[in-house]
Structure formats: structure tokens, C-alpha cells
Length: 318
Image 1: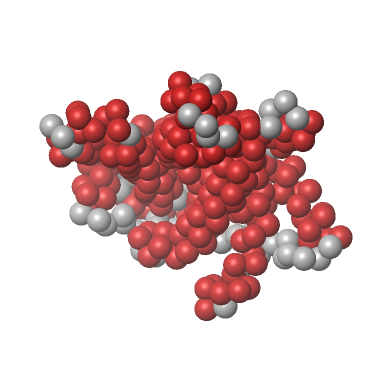
Image 2: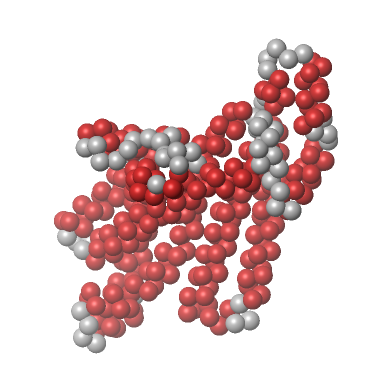
């Protein structure tokens, strides 16, 4: 198992470094000049040249990359070229919104997908089971923006149950207000991603119902439901673990759109603003951190799956 974990860590490090190269190169292809953004459209060529030199933009591309990635490896993400503020401090501040939003969305995904997926498979021949399945297809096809607007109209404008936009100025010092501000955004992406995971859970449950060990349990006198719960669901759980990392990554990416729609001061909204301002150092550091989180989630899912899957226990003891 130790060898397996070390191998996954090594692959994670290689993938992360390759991602850093791709992120750095892609941002350099984008049109625009941060020196012109800072100096303004009326800045003289001499002033623009001074700014480029002060920002290190006149250095060779490889030098710029190695200075940046070297700082990241020392846990120094640098400073914003526009404000001079610490990027690490801003990321931590914005993560106080994005991380709880992602976790709440993931909780909604699990609450929606797991029980309904199992129910729809168990009752696949019933009218209610077919209605649940059809509803999942409909919900998963709704764009996030449309779902958010519909939620604002129904839950905020008509029913006035939840706030439509914004986040408390004092943040989590007012826990209930902060939590209420995240409920509608979390529902927006959680229900859609939950509908996607629902179909996966339903398919896994259908396979479990047809599995030999479940049929054997029923032949020994267990009811179909008891056999499924006792012998089928563990296998369904293993299958769900395999895709949870992808679901968490999708939720993190979805937060970029949702935070814009609901005016939440999180990582997604900050990233969109910084791209428009051409704050390259901040943008590339933010994307690299988010990429690292997504890669780490994938590696963690692989390790957990190997730990709990009895078919892999023998090889995990190497």
C-alpha cells in the first residue's frame, strides 16, 4: 500500500508541474498587457517600459516561469501586480466562501443522488420510479445559469425564503446569515450535479440487484430489499466513491459561475475579475491552486478506493 500511495503522489506531482507549464503558457498567449492596464491608455511608452521592467515582464519567458514556480514551491504565491496584496492571503479569504459552498453543494449531491438512485433502481418498474428517473434527466439538462435564475425568481422573489445575492460583510462572524447566503447557490449546482450522480447510482444499483451474491442472498430466504441493503449496497458504495472526486471537481468549477451569478466574494468571482484586469501572477497562482486541489481529490479517491475495495486488498499489501 505504501508503494501505491508513493506512486500516486509522484504522479500527482508530475501532473501538477505539467499543469503549471500549461497554465503559464496559456496566459501568456492571451491578448493585452498588464503594464498598459496599470499605466492606463494614456501612459507614455517610457512609462509603459518602466512598468514592464518593474514587473519583470521584460525578462525571458523561462526566467519568469522558474521565478514564479520556485516561489510556489516555497509556499510563496507572490503578490498581485495591481494591488501589491499577498496572493496567499487573498486566496485564504476567498476560500472561506468557496470551500463551504462546495462542501454544502456536495452534501446536497449525496442527499439527492444516493437515496433516490437506489429507490429508482429498486422501483424501476413502478410509475414513481420512472417519474424520478425522468426528472433526473430533465434537471441534469438545465444550464447552471438558468437554474440559478429560476431559484432566484421562486425562492427569493416570490417566496422570499432566501437571499438572492451577496454575502455578509463580516463573513462567518454571523454564521446563520452566511449559511443562508450559500443555500441557494449550493442548491443551484448541487441539484444539477446530484441528478448526474443519481443516474450513476441507479445504474450501479441495477447491476447490484442482478449480481450473483445478491441473488444467492434472496435464495436463502432474504427479501429482495434486505438482500440489496445487506449485500448489494456495499458494491454500490464502491462505485460511487470512484466518481466522487470528479463530482467534487465539477462542483468546484461550477462555483466559478455560481459566485458570479449570486455576487459571492469567492475564488470564482475573484478569478473572473483578475482575468479581466490581466493580473497574470494572481490568475495563474489561483488556477494552479485549484488544479492542485482537483488533482489531489482524484488521487485521494484512488487511495480510498484501494483501501476499501476487497478485490484490491491483496495487491495493496505490497
